[in-house]
Length: 257
Image 1 (tube, rainbow, N blue to C red):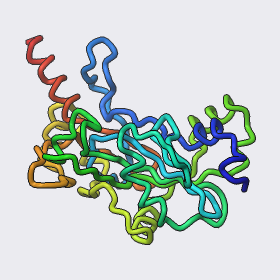
Image 2 (image 1 turned 135 degrees about the vertical axis):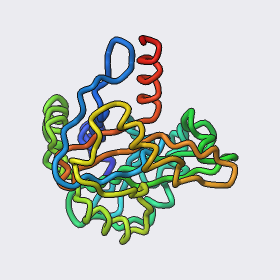
Image 3 (image 1 turned 60 degrees about the horizontal axis):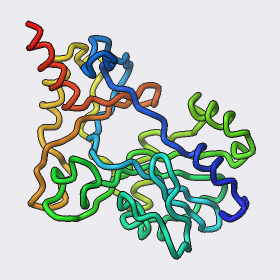
């Protein structure tokens, strides 16, 4: 595989972006609330904490090279003397990227949430009372190098069509353990039939499974969690349920009564 200097970075950036996750209940474009339509799940559903920070990527290449970036941009390549310091991603992830084992073939992408710090997100104070940065791994994927030879429009279509190969829950756990990376907290595994399909029920479900964050970085953290990510064990369905969306919806409905 070519060195970083010889890669088409636009192609690499596009091929390794993390796909959007829909809300568990459909968003109402009229008022930002939620509609009654819920995402269908089947089989076992894994619940994990959704951490409110900024999405980040470690793009590991054969031979030891790597790049770091946010969800949309690449910020740093191994050996750079100057890098984009925005969002604290490079500061938080460079030591980790330096010690991750390189893949023998292909492009391995580690997707992490970087959180806390100094105003990484509006919720930073919920995780730290100071400026401590943290990160948690939430997914890992492999991308075939040949994908980078496609035109950018083709790469986008490939990605949006589910072309990235994501590891299963068991494999993700093994990869995280081998690399000594903490994952986002696993809360529970429930049967799809246990998932509430109504707004009030899902709000109560959130409170039951995650009333306070499990990834606070110090004693000064506010502790309010963002929500939960729901993922079928075979990755056929993924959705997010955020406290803010359900609280807004319930408030809107109360006003309409």
